[in-house]
Image 1 (cartoon, helix red, strand yellow):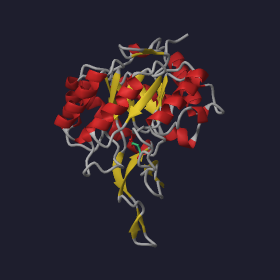
Image 2: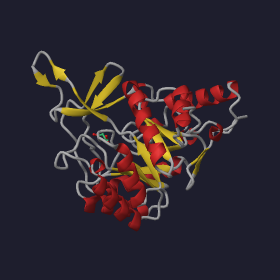
Image 3: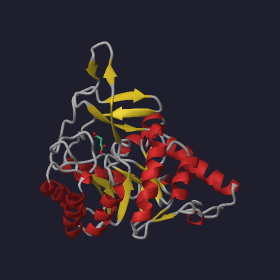
Image 4: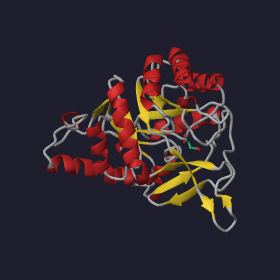
Amino acid sequence: MVDLSSDLGFIKLKNPVITASGTFGYAEEFQDFFNLDILGAFVLKGIYKDPKPGNSPPRIHETASGLLNSIGLPGPGAKELQKIVKKIHKLTKTPIIINVCGDTDEEYIEVAEIFDKMDEVTMLELNISCPNIKMGGKCPAQDEKHTYKLVNQIKHITSKPLIVKLSPNVNDISSIAISAEEGGADCISLVNTFLGMAVDLDSKKPVFKNLFAGLSGPAIKPLALKLIWEVVQSVHIPVIGIGGIFSGKDVLEFILTGASAVQIGTINIVEPSASVRIIKEIEDIMIKSNIKSLDEIKGKLKI
Ligand code: SIN
């Protein structure tokens, strides 16, 4: 027997596998593929206060070992999501994480306040890093002061653990992570997608109307690992690693680099039941390598 649990300090997850926002719908879509109880936790698609249509198509484009997306955070709005959350909570007791979005700081706060009141919600993940929306061309996670201020404001109105999801599209991710920690974040998740673009030779136009889109999938794994390493060295709060994880081996590499848990994203789109396989692979590798608990290897990269 091996211990797959992941202790984030404010919560102990049964295993380190969390499904990432935007790749797992509202969870109920996945119950035909596997029992939601097996997950460490899941993050629902990012939500604004009011319904949003998202970006016009095309919204995704496959690349070598990756996926570009320009979805634009469509959603039914907070009121509708509250009803969905109540429904999901009846299906599973796996911790539910709400990915909080806002066009303005005030909207972020309003959305956080709405879900803070729900017992069915375990944690909030502040999405300050979506590359596909236009807050004056920038997202809050690209600015230290904005990150600090917003995290601090949210922290004051919520009693739930607060995860802050960072953007890789910055010069110095450590200083943004430190700002989030100083603002009161309980945990950092990184990375959101890398800005990229695709062009269409026939039309001689960019593929996406927004020109740029967010790259995910195995292509970004080495880039993500490097940024996770940097952030782990810079903050004292737990880090959730995200970026091209497709296997149990990938998960253990992220843990070795210092992540306490991981989010799996793009693989859910390719292989909806990937979580089941990945959790089994983690267990198999741990048994084979005589690793009794994740703590035994967490952050133990030999430099
Ligand atoms: C999107 O809906 O555009 C992706 C969400 C994100 O990257 O945060």
